[in-house]
Length: 237
Image (cartoon, rainbow, N blue to C red; front, side):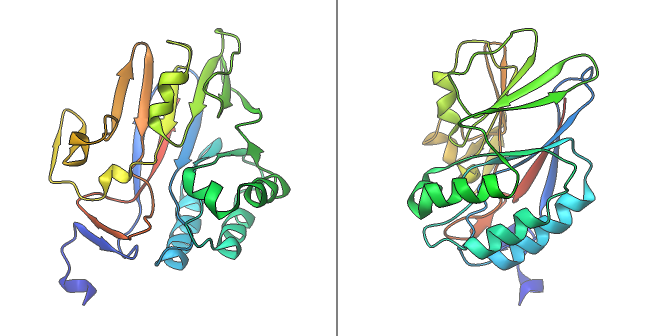
């Protein structure tokens, strides 16, 4: 049955995860692996976790960021803990929450992340020393650090970029929109028809001096996609 499906059609995480590669800067010499919208608990979650464990092990990253909606309406806590237990011990990682996480159990999620060794980015900052410049990564759109650093904002909802100080963050990573799951046309890096309804339904945007990169995510409460690959983003900074 699976062999008869269009390669563009993905049901219950049957297709492989795409590694989308982005180059943001060439002089800092660090890489960020960004994962968003896991929706653990939705059908296909066990397959997704197996795929993610393999994908994370296959790439070289200096930091891992989770962009929210780790859990679905009916959360799979055991799958989340399994995934977190496999993260490389020598790589720092941080998390922001999404709207589904708050329904699933915000406090429990926060405690699990901290117990597993992650940084809860809405409360703190993850600091990475680059070759010439520090990377300061936060989940707070109104945070303020030195402009001498390469400041990065990790969000769930890309519309939150409008709350951030103008031109303060060099890079913003977000998810939430799933590329709207069905893509019939890509034009000027916008994904249609979703872009008719959601301003940020696209791949990348310039907001002043800030680059916003939006992930199409990894999973969905209704796990059916067409021409909208599930992805992780590997950013070279």
